Length: 77
Image 1 (cartoon, rainbow, N blue to C red):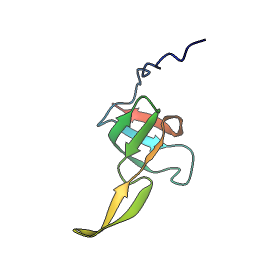
Image 2 (image 1 turned 135 degrees about the vertical axis):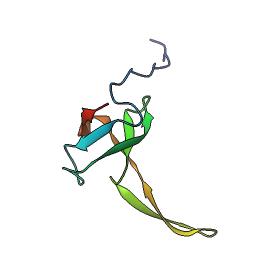
Image 3 (image 1 turned 180 degrees about the vertical axis):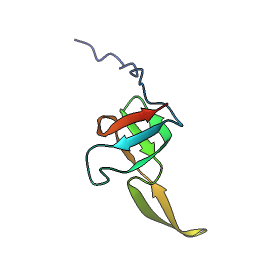
């Protein structure tokens, strides 16, 4: 069987939607979706999975990381 390229799945959660984290380290937090990666089923939520990144030009920056699509629940679109 040949390796066929996988097609991104159409997700119900879109950029700008309000969601609640239902599993993981940030369980219970709510925020709006900043970015969606449909190919890897990951989303980036404001204030969730905040990571510190050091940049020579800007210094310390607080950036959100991607979390799994299945760990969030849609509150309103």
